[in-house]
Length: 418
Ligand code: ZN
Ligand code: ZN
Image 1 (cartoon, rainbow, N blue to C red):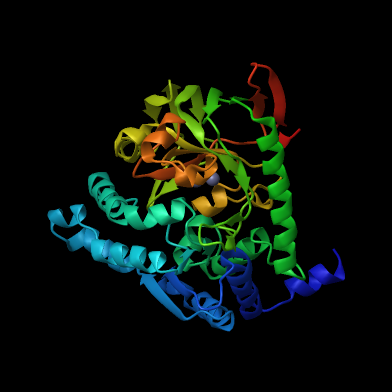
Image 2 (image 1 turned 180 degrees about the horizontal axis):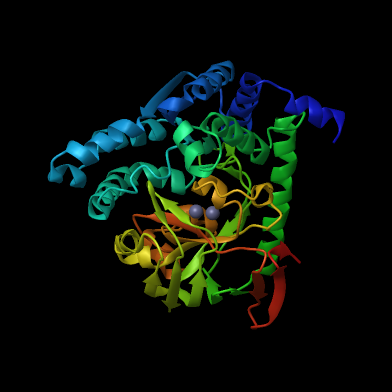
């Protein structure tokens, strides 16, 4: 251990929150002077929200607006609201967020919700409530999935999330443990986190450029419970790290991020895939997922826990049974290295190679932002109300790239880049 690393570890929680806030504003968002910022956060994240707000104004933000979520209030709805409530969403709020994005606001989400919050609630109500939100949020979310604005997600430790992650630890120790895991995997435990992020970003860009040069037509996966071939969309583009949004600002949409990813072909997935980690989906846990694809469509889906939620999820619409993202992450990423399962997609998707059911990112198709939905679909980009990542990578997964002529080239062996 170097002295510099030791110094970084000795910083107080407030100092580290401040560094995370700086990474969020200067690296994650690339916030521009004069820009508005719309932030969402769990109630418990107030200390981080205040650090971020300060740095946003220091960077010249014209206005910072934070919308807080309260887990307890969300539960009261499931306990006491009339049945019709679950088909309802605050459309006016999502329309307002869309209007803010259209008029130039940046978007920052702080994640930290209790991953088990809704696990005892009726799957039907959970499914309907999620669908209503997906529908209401879609117009605003499209500005994000199309990367028209600069946006990012960072994490804040919350007591309920920490308790879910470390159920066997003394309760008074779990919050600090989760904060440390967030700082470690978000590259805050270094002497200069902003510089560390710039270097890491360059590495991901290089990996994406390599894959874009290769122009593989498909990927072939082999591992325990997985024998799977996935075609890539025509004119697909691999992306990793930061991206220049449609508003011209360079942002890194996830802190942390370890993935390079692209758009698979919605009609070209065949074989069986087994998840390598549990999937935490909107407050419920789906475990032991195994699905079989034919011509891009899920024809069989099983889970050892949360089977009904999984069925509801893939029944959302036709596109929910097809894939919208494929991502490669080496098993040696700091998140995998931590050995922790976070029950939070921001972290778990960056711990392992993954695929996502549902909506494709049009930015992962060449000139995708200029194409009509029909043109995107013709190239193989999937369309859905949902986008749900699930982890299939492990130290036992091998992946080959299949060239246009059908030759197989080793890409990953035992979960690591060849
Ligand atoms: Zn991903
Ligand atoms: Zn994804």
